[in-house]
Image (tube, rainbow, N blue to C red):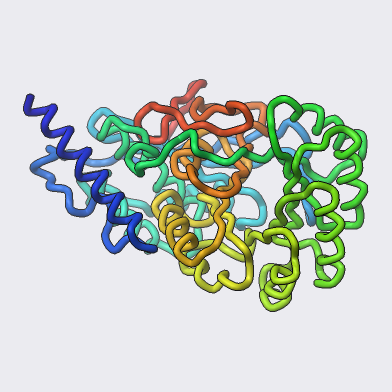
Length: 390
């Protein structure tokens, strides 16, 4: 009976803390900072370990600027009192992080001074202060902490947040810049599985790409220019044409620093315009108001779930739309994102579906939506043997 009451008290505290956080734009206190160590019987030390891993893409992935066939990641594990929390740092080239830089950062990360993984905000303040940048490395620690804390509570994070895991937007399926033949092949692969497609544009072949897809399907489309359009007038002409072709949103149409022209484009655009490269962290959100219609939150850019939750609340408080995005990731990071994106306007969470060697099982694709697992924490487990070390 004592253990049952203890669990109920803990769960009630978590729910009340999250409720308080959702009442204002930015939570004024950490979700877990007021927990009594005596009440929750926390003890022991956290042990951090890691392993590099290379994701193999099913198709060559081309966007405005570069192509790649693999994405390096670093997977981490935090052990604590018989429990294990998993995290991931995904490292696409534009982030500027490498497996070596992530491992070097993790070597500097000493969690031995913290006795409770549930003090996520307190721990992440320390982690964030170790060095500037390194957002993907920090996200890996954050995700693993959330996984641990949720396992301690015996609940998935969507329940702790008070969200409905089925109240989610359809995820897009990404089609990179390619030949007509390959574009049509990728489009056919998506039919019957996805309800909206995401098309990489931003070059000379934008209309050709759209027409190739339209020769196969009339599904709604989102487009991501990855800063590829340089002239505002040409960008507006393209958006007007895209709207006639069934496009429903535009992501990062112009260079990230060109905020004045983006603001004018957003004002004139018949489609919502979302920030991606222009926004990284919580401190960037407020200056995006009046420039973009909405923001794309990615765990690897914002240091993880704790900051993503704050960005979500602040953006909605400012009257902006919110999208949950991803890099090419395993089901570890995708499952973490799936725990907090219920109620958002758009989603691009197909990262684990683009690779052939996913090493985790977690959130699943159901009727075009990524549905969070009911398992505690972020809801993942390894599906192949991984050797973690220091």
